[in-house]
Amino acid sequence: MPTWKTLFDQHPEVPAEKLRWWLSDYLGVSLTMLPLHSVPSPVELAAFEAAAARLKLGEPVQYVCGKAPFWDFEVYVTPEVLIPRPETEQLVQLALEVAVSAGKKVLDVGTGSGCIAIALKRACPKCVVSGVDVSEAALAVARENALRLGVEVGFHSGDLLDAEADRSLDVLVANLPYIGESEREDLHREVRDFEPALALFSGTDGTDLVVRLLDEARRVLKNQGKIVLETGESQGHVYASAAERFGWRLENRSDLAGRPRFWILERAHV
Ligand SMILES: C[S@@+](CC[C@H](N)C(=O)[O-])C[C@H]1O[C@@H](n2cnc3c(N)ncnc32)[C@H](O)[C@@H]1O
Image (cartoon, rainbow, N blue to C red):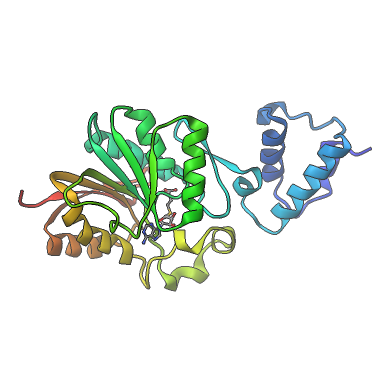
């Protein structure tokens, strides 16, 4: 009878770290405690073969396991939502530092799995946090996450800010799609073939949705309101000119690798 280790060796086309990640999640044990020399039961063997077949096609391990780590919790993910990225935790951190505090009404625009909205609510329970997305499938995942984690975050459907009332919000936080259609072929296959296109692409150069957001935000934000954004690293000139056009003062922050990927905006003239 094959051990887990033998099974791993029988699938050299799947990176061993992905098989280890899957097994650790499946058995609920840490990566350092994997029982690699024990023999799986027939049920475990069937689960392994099903997972290995998906991983072999290049499907991200987070979709195969149905979860991904984010902030101080785990989010449930399906192929209908972007897998939360570690950089986005920096967006949450920044929003908490510069804009989100008790009593503020906060909207996560393009909420996907709901990871940003849920992290903000966990970190700042006295905020009123909601999330909006154009994808009903993503909203179902976000609602399931809020339910599982027991946080009070409302999720609703909308195309950017079209569902929001005038002057109703204090803070907009967004990690909207920012990849250009022209970059599609350069993307890693795991991303291009498995993550939802709706969560990735935003016009030819990737800036369309954020520029639209800067325009529409003028209507829904209160006077002292702020926008905190994560974007692509070489798009600053586009946002600087849009900010000037729409009357926003723009401040840039870099990610841990020094790339200018985060933005804080507030009204230039209140
Ligand atoms: C890059 S993903 C980010 C998901 C999540 N906020 C995160 O950080 O992991 C962008 C999200 O924006 C949503 N989206 C795309 N176009 C939109 C639009 N016009 N209005 C609202 N949401 C939109 C997508 O469905 C997707 O869930």
